[in-house]
Length: 129
Image 1 (spheres, rainbow, N blue to C red):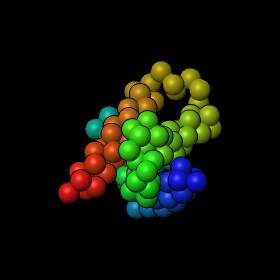
Image 2 (image 1 turned 90 degrees about the vertical axis):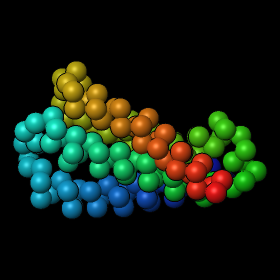
Image 3 (image 1 turned 45 degrees about the horizontal axis):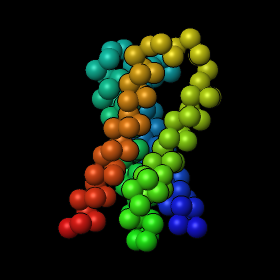
Image 4 (image 1 turned 30 degrees about the vertical axis):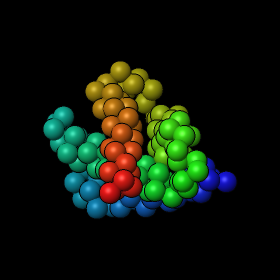
């Protein structure tokens, strides 16, 4: 039950932050054709995604209770499963399978471990202090 509670919190936080990102960042600044440069893609798409993943990981890790928290693998599964599942869903729903070789795909893929690591580090630093 502890995993389910963490995953539920992770889903809620990820959905809320991604909707906020789509509304506040992608809507006004990213057009239907995407962004023009790699720097703009990094600033307007991938860094906000990193923030969303880190926040969802941190929230899921924070609500994971103490007896299960002591097991590192179980705690990582509680914290990182939702962002990983969301990444897999996004890849499965990708309209352009030929775009998998492009830099946007690889940057998007790099956001997952970086965001999970940032969320876990944030949880570790806040939890121990």
